[in-house]
Image 1 (spheres, rainbow, N blue to C red):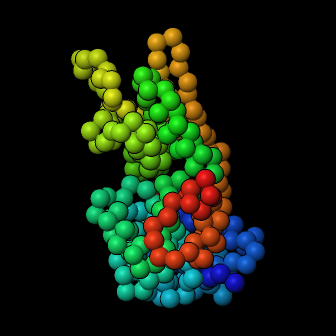
Image 2: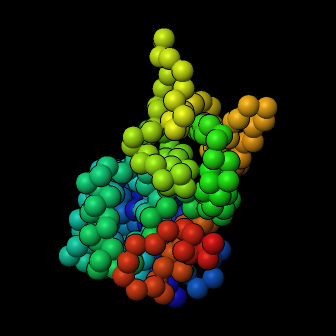
Length: 255
Ligand code: NAD
């Protein structure tokens, strides 16, 4: 039985992971981290703790869907207590990403800004299209619910990175995050990544390739957060079998 710990357990995705684990054969929820009392019922066999080390010790693998500052604390704790980690938290800073790389030298870490199969494939398609459609302008639009804190989404940035990499560009040098006023014409290599927020949209990403006379748009829409929770559980099952290292969702899916 694989013992799974959940970090960010009271969040939108965390709660679904707890529910979905009940249907996951060979896996059981062993511990959740909670800063204060949980606002939902949980099986009494599950350890509810506000101590990071206790969460890690009770788990064969920990799934994290929290906030960047919280994820940082979790990563720091694993330096003393290496435990396989599936990280879904987005908006990580350069320092936090470096910490993640450091941790992955001691244990397997899977980091994915999107746990869905569809987006993993979309990343591959964006890479291919960016190479094949050399002269097309690339623009990315993402839409999420009104509660989302980071912008643009981690998924949109990952898609933009795939596009830039396919064309041998550094994303930091070509990314545009807004257009307003008399800014002049679009430059050839720029890739805009725009974020819209509203309502209860789970997640929608469109990568467009625009040329004179034609355009093509690749679109992915998540209609349920279970896509992410189930994807994270599938990743955790796979990750416990791996040796230390940093893995992506494509590694797990064999894409
Ligand atoms: P949420 O706001 O509903 O939940 C956040 C959770 O983090 C809560 O349980 C909260 O208690 C916990 N938390 C916040 N600060 C903390 C701290 N200092 N210490 C410990 N715990 C803390 O958010 P959500 O919608 O569930 O999303 C969580 C994260 O996952 C976000 O970064 C979001 O962008 C990302 N996300 C990733 C994917 C993916 O597939 N990778 C999909 C959806 C969301």
